Length: 406
Ligand SMILES: Cc1ncc(COP(=O)(O)O)c(C=O)c1O
Image (cartoon, rainbow, N blue to C red):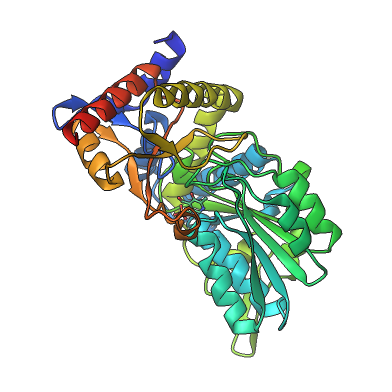
């Protein structure tokens, strides 16, 4: 192991434990990544010494907590290169961010006959909110089909686009297959038809540099817990012009300017969309997570994960009876596969007994499993702290399971 890998692993105490008597090998990073000490310490320091409500400005602790929470918003702005912190709404996570947009757009944008375009490989979080929105408004969902390679059918996409398309809601990277979608090109085409574009960046923010201004998307969502941060906090980026047009999502404290029994005026951006006391510790943890990524270097993270993906793919290809599900040319460090004659959950359970954590099942993306006519896959997903040695042990584990199942 190189010094840099060792140094990174040292920052993740959870990785240095045994599970079922074996060293833990954590390959479930697409579900959630582990947290470095920097994040854990930032959260515990807040509760040990800094706990206070924010935006009240009444005393020292409150001012300190507010400053850190707002520093987190600025760190998010920097991470995705948004123009202003007014465009950064802190939410519970990707799911809430998409629900916010779906709920607000269904109130003021969608009309009967309008179309929302999604793809066949979306996570349920980028399907169900649109189903609810169109049901309320008599609009329609159109689905971009998926090729056998796990890539989007771009010819079909172009044919599906029309002046009726009000929104393209698309994942940047598929959590189930790892496919990196050509979002730049697709956003440009959708814009030509006058559609808004929401990008589900839950799987891209952890692995690559994202520039929302260069992408020119209207909305971009991600979750802190997949970028080495805590659960329960995430991000909705929205272009200021769009956010200004949208009605509030939830109401109560924080999102108001003035309340009387005659009526209420709403707060400025971004607070208009942040009703109630937020997840302050989560925001402070998110700040530490972004600082961690910046210290390691997002380029380094991307490069390292590409190396791990190439190594694991090569090793798996050397085994007999492996069927890859999704072999897109552009892929993130996610491998979905099946082993002949072994049910994914059986493979997952035996690997677990060997200390190897993978995910099995439909990965909250049932439609793409239906597309491939399978109930689920085994998914190994890598992060910057994983190693080639762990991949070797994973391959040995699969060989053991294959022997067990004859
Ligand atoms: C592509 C994608 N979208 C959305 C989500 C939902 O994220 P969260 O559960 O953090 O809200 C996930 C989580 O796995 C995901 O991978």
